[in-house]
Amino acid sequence: MPANINSMASGRGIKPWHNLGVIVDGLMTASDCLRQAGLNWAVSKEALQTAGGIVVPNAFAVKRSDNNAILGVVGNQYTALQNADAFSYMDAITQDHGSAKYDTAGALGKGERVWLQVKVEGEISIKTKTGRSTDDTLERYILMANSHDGSSPLLIATTMVRVVCQNTLTAAIKDASTMFKVRHTKSIGGKVTDAREALGIINASYVELEAKLQRLAQIKVTDKAFEGYIASLGFDTEATKGKGKGSVDTLKALFGGEGMGASLETAKGSAWGALNAVTQYVDHERSTRVTGASSFTSEGEARLASQWFGSGLALKDKALEKALALVA
Image (cartoon, rainbow, N blue to C red):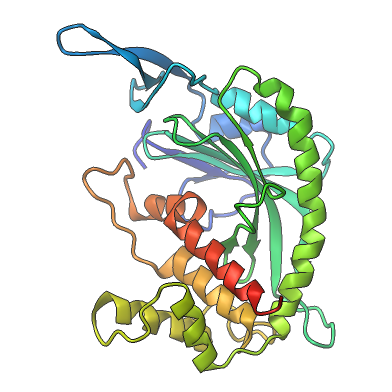
């Protein structure tokens, strides 16, 4: 990745599952993340002017300090949240979680979206009908994302990574109990207590979520039922050619046994397997275009942005909702 355009780092000596960024041995502190992920830069608001020098009312450019890149245009009310402050904020939130470890961090596009992911101790283990443990596990993370273009507030959400295939699942992203939002204002420091309370609720919700995912593994799904499932997500199961047919064929193949972990007892022919076929499609198979107007420099970067923050996230969120409806 070109320097000063985007940067990412992954700790624990593990290659990032999205194949982006640099590998860092051992665990990372917040300051490590800032340095290793190339996030030691700040942003400033500068008034916009016309070519003739006339100041544009209530319009400011957000400028990156190290390379003068313009990350977005914002109004009077926008207060920049610096990378160092956002990471310190996460430090304060997780100080009661001694097992929390900084895992990955980075910036997308020109730096307009910055994230930090914290690994939380403990896993969700999907068991067989008889209660036997399997290799089908999900690691638990807390994802913090901040925007420098005014597109969103500071977001804190729970994210899970299925170890066997490195698919990501962000549960109930629209539920206030699983995502905490902090507006870009000067009062952010006073929000730490509220955020820590929200994370306590999130931690408790994992117990409920694990029970639901266990039930997904018990629900059998036939090939015909799977076709109805992906149709409910907007895929054209009647398509006979083109991209529509290709997407459906890929999904059917993933569910039918070609997906990573699809042959596991917990996933084979189950609602859990159906959900993971969709998440693998979004995370690894779905085509992602990088146009000249895009700030992304690679398909991998654009795909990561989509699956965590954009249309990919929305599709996976809907897939989880539809799958859970099967066990409601």
